[in-house]
Image (cartoon, rainbow, N blue to C red):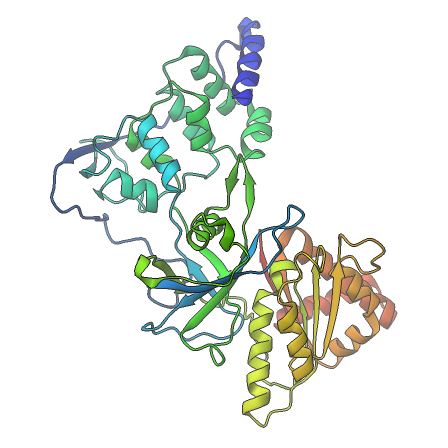
Length: 471
């Protein structure tokens, strides 16, 4: 509400200048979608052509149950809530390798869906079969992710992204269905040329979505077809597979931190999974819990194509350097499990494996500490360098520091043909690790920056420098 009051003040000041009574607005895009409802004992969901394809899919969709989970981080405000979940894939045709990813089909928060339905006055029709069509004589298309037949509740729950940042054309469309004059002017200002700075600072940068707007602009009550026209598709979320199939048959493990995305919201998929496993049971937060499959909790998942070749070298003796702070360590657990399996079940000699892992505090979020210690003891892992960013007097704060500290040995491995794998946040890890390695090559080989950059770029082309990064 504070945001709205700020805008009201902006508009009042702006309107004092009579030259700005009218704003420069985007071209109006009329909504030609029409909707009708009918009572039906059996509601179906149909698309114009077919159901939208799953991005990067290399398997069919499979409904999996959660058979177990555990918390990997401490219950502490100084670290994120991090969990591991085991999906039961018994009966699927899933085959995967370490480094592969799984797509999870999320659904929107039930309270958020009901809030929109109530605000728009659709409680009486939300479960009725609707038919969506184009106004006769108009040239338009139904968005491919919106069913032509379904229910409003189904679409708002499973098909559209309620949390997508609203674009200017959507703001303009919403303003056309806002009765209060001041609220309408605010929406127009935000999507106008004159309000572009405010749109960036207070809409884009603050991740304002439809849910926020309907809360702030009480008189904004568009027809549901306007919502259908403008909301983007609710897309699957990718997660690294933590385990080796050879060591964990019929199981896919994922590791995730529950994101606080602002506006008092948790991450859509991670918040949903957390809610499922905790089931509002605070005492279970620190427990390893086997879930009762009779609860009928089924999660739609599928295997994704490994587009960037993030997989172990074909020759087991090839050295590998693994760089993964926080949950970025997840795929490397699968790498090391696979190496453990090969060591125990083949005659292959394993090359060196060096992991650089970082977290805030070893007492709070040292993920997979026990497993990493076991990998060191059984030879699947040769070296482990840790970094703790929130520990006083710790020399190695970040994985970048660890690389610098061990630059000579790292470059020797690279010169010996090592593959370098990076997993983590695109904003920090992707760019900074590359710069550190370039700097290490410059100092070790006494070459120019241009020559060092070329060396790393050539590694990328040869698929010896591979990054699995996310935003």
